[in-house]
Length: 239
Image 1 (cartoon, rainbow, N blue to C red):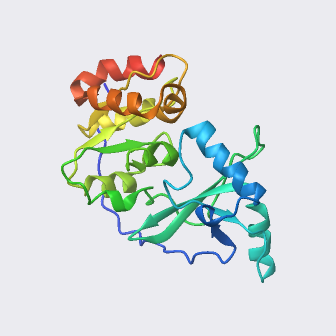
Image 2 (image 1 turned 60 degrees about the vertical axis):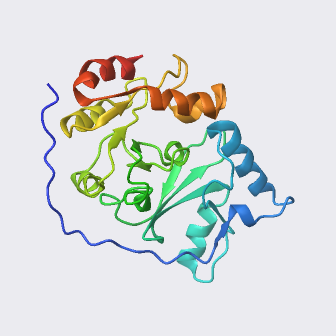
């Protein structure tokens, strides 16, 4: 029994952030920018994403005031993934480009309980499914949305439920998404369980392994309603 997920009403204001002066777009970099080249390779090899598929940033490492300079320096050698709402910055995650980093992500010093990656996708393409992921990088493949964690806050649920689109959760495998799955089932969302084999955890890994066409077709062909997902989803997430 997955119980029920209550959608509580919140009035937490949206905090819009100024775009930091030390951010610069990955897509605008020259071929002799080694950090940019590393970031481009990182996206392609690990996630199957072209660096022009989304507005990614890097940090110059320099800023005028000491506090900003400290933050700017800490974000060097990281891929900065901005979160927009109404095309304005509300959050970011900075993913380390190292192979085995001590700190995988550095996040914006801003509230995130009411932040959804891909917010502006909630109210476009209304006839198409709205795919919901944990990882922003997974969601980029299908212009979906992401909630950053393996459980949604009540504020995130409230935001997502405002979209008229049919919601479809795409859980990760290996027990990473059990709580998300329970929430989606209780909200009567559909669940997408693509055939990505036993060695891949999520669709990005599968796209690198199998190719994007295969994975996207498998996603379209393996959507189940919440009743079917109570059994199939649990099996899928454990596999």
